[in-house]
Length: 291
Image 1 (cartoon, rainbow, N blue to C red):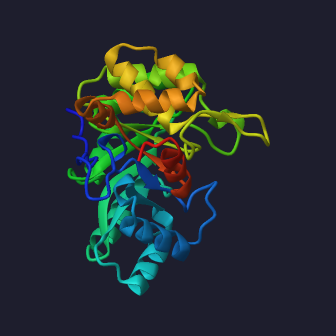
Image 2 (cartoon, rainbow, N blue to C red):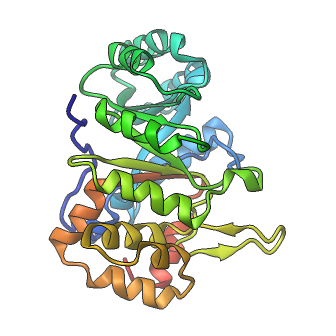
């Protein structure tokens, strides 16, 4: 089965001047840890972002399947001008997918389903992936997160071969959730070697550049590191060096030097990432003069 075509809105710089490398890069995960936003606040901030100066940077809104009734209730109160572009995060098990999608589709005046994201079982087999395809409409992107561990890259390959986007978790609530530079590089080697593949990243990527958390000493990956690493992966460069870099100016200069076709190729592969904060990535990109 061929991979799902990328649904990233790779538009050229628009009236608000978002470069192609960053167009629709940041998906809103304010409802997920470390985010603490209530549903009303998360929606209000997201919709304000879609109207703001950096609207072209903002992607879809993430919501758990278990919270769909709450989401719909708030949207009825808000009465948005356009249906909310939604990524549905399956936290109710694969069997709950058809009901959740049915609920979303019944409220098409409020919701526009763009993605369905779910964790994979420890053994990502063809039978499970076929069920995912059966449950999720063809025009909706399927995002599957294989668990890191022994043989996880085989799971990544199977996800791609089946036409879904693999997702890589770059952090979380404990140190075990943070993949090493080598693990991320190995993941990029797999996805960049698969024609037509796209992937999504999530967790702890709210800052542009790799840095150490002063509270616990854990090194956090940066989304700009990941963008530059993808560019190097596609051109045969030093991927690990890009992922490990902490020189913000050097990373920004390399990102700025990408041609428009190269930037679009990077984003065709690295489709988007989920961030609990929108203000932080905007602030970092502005400070680096990338917006």
